[in-house]
Image (cartoon, one colour):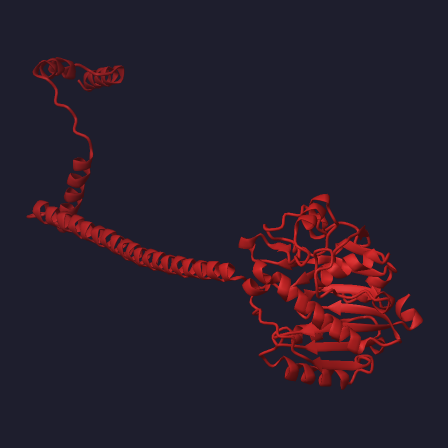
Length: 418
């Protein structure tokens, strides 16, 4: 299956005001692992106001003239045709409910025109790929072919990354789904030209959507039969289109374009399968509300940064004041210690001079030091008169046995002399 059997692929990409997305799209083309010489590229540029066509030509020239012999693709087709699409390309216009029916019918015409002009008998597969896919496996063609289904899509509601304040991620669209009894009853109640579109409150279908069955840790090869398909990334066998299945530009079972394509393929007994856990990521395009919220967040950020800057400046100023006050305090303490030291020295000198008048200098100093030492000693309480009177008689007697013996010895000595 696939390149082992030299099966050729027709890769179709409709473009409208896609100048900003083309460099990213061509980087994906270069990274595809399916042999490039087995892939024919087909582009339809319609209702564009930017430089999509000129940039496309330039990028294709560089691609086909690449020095790597494995880089150039097969046949290249570029078709320019307008279909009168009046809906603007901004998010609100493209995804607004009121524009859905007419917009999708014109998109179906563009797809059918591109396919009819470029499908060759040599093609075994047709791969539809939008230009604004941000990330997808390089092996996506081989991965999808391996299932050998008539129509197969990855998690075709195609998840897109979002800013944290929007929840991080969400499905880009809800066009891959299984039919529900509620939706069938709704279809029966609508006019024959009505087109049911998913993800809008006006049409509550309660269908199981491929996007919400996604498990980041699920088996990427798990298959799920579906009825409607999204158009961001579709791989179909060429025989499906050769048998008459196409993209209805009218209401087919109350659907149009890719969702009606899925319905028509199933009506003609072809297998239509989705891979809920095989995910590709669509480019995030902010809505007007998103842009408004971003602007408010940016203003809040600037105010917060200004406040933080002001608080930081105030903290630095306060720190400088504290450091300066701390230095002054240390200087004051140092100066105070020096002053006290000088005062003590002066007082000591004065006492020396006072005590030392009429005395030798050494004695004066010694007396002064003694006075200073006495001043530092605690005062001894004076004796009372009674204690003083009682102390006299006691002092006249020998105080100790040793003194008495000394006196006796003195008396004996005198007697010998006589």
